[in-house]
Image 1 (cartoon, one colour):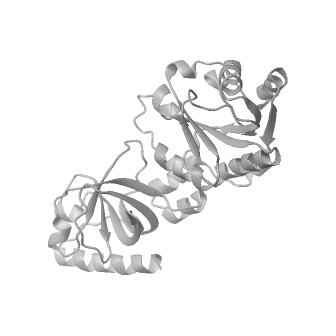
Image 2 (cartoon, helix red, strand yellow):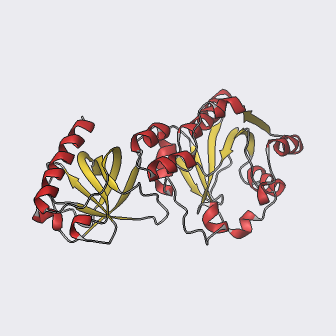
Image 3 (cartoon, rainbow, N blue to C red):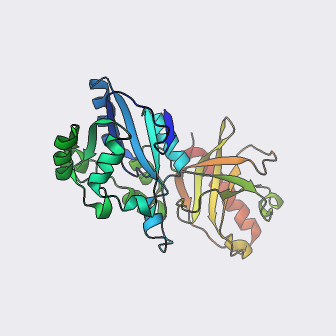
Length: 308
């Protein structure tokens, strides 16, 4: 997949079939649209093009909303779209000025003049342009004026999926990892640099890697203990990840720390990707460190069953 930061370097391609949206998480519902896009491009002997936006429009339009949490970083979105076979990805910078474009201006100046779009695939409820005034009916009018085709994915095709980014976020924030993964069609993940923690885990025989995420908008699942896969360089290892504030040690600082099974290397400053597989338990304050050790052993045993 070729990636273009804005449209300045986008080439003049033939038979472009385009869809656009934020595609946060690139979940099962999104994939219905993207599959239709790729099928249409193949039928027309054309090129499948996705236009997405960065930063997320809500982060620009409503910066005071500090509760914005996203399922995918821009790098993760690129990886996901590439994995399903999209040929071209345009990452359009989203600014206040850009948000003021009318739907007609956007189609004329961007999709026609800059992209040279020939066909467009959208969901039945797609909206775009200033104040989201553009919709499928408006696209139909503009398709006649600017000579492009537009295909609407019927409501029943979308609604039967019953998947939304909001539903997935709610599942993750309640610890329902397996349900979220089912809606995503892949294991939800976070990535970050390994930084030094207080090294308590090592003193009780279970060293952990403390993760510092590289995106402040990335959604972190609910506090608790989870089975996980750990991607380190080219290796996919098994682990147990804990999210929370170490209640047994009266630590009020929230952390993400992972114990990698059968692994004891110095990986400070290296990047790990944690794939959440299943929920094990909530955070709990133990009266004795020995009780915590027994619980960790139980967590590892259960995680090993999840990760077969």
